Length: 111
Image 1 (cartoon, one colour):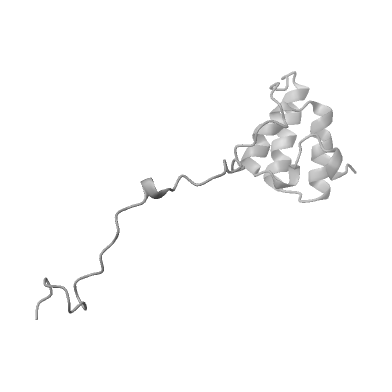
Image 2 (cartoon, rainbow, N blue to C red):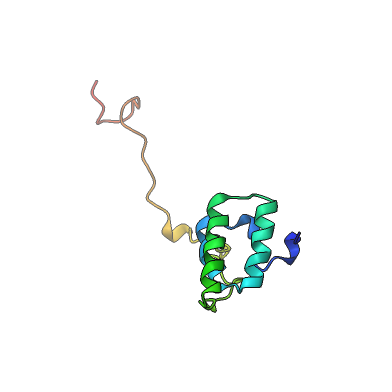
């Protein structure tokens, strides 16, 4: 049984199913079998197992891996904050006056 640290997809356990099904297209048959073995012995998610079985069938028929990088950027993760706040004295809004009701010094308030 393969260990988590030796899997061909980094952070495999935290990838959403939609991202996982597209990332397996970059793997060859041996790497895909490794992932399939790991999946069956851990989460055993039907949708993932079926996608991997289907992809293994395609590879057996001669389809080539997509050539993408399985460790590439992960759009499902938010980018790191750029640092700093764009808020400054120049970008703050105007001061807010209190509402007229309940302020006896306000001439606009009916008496």
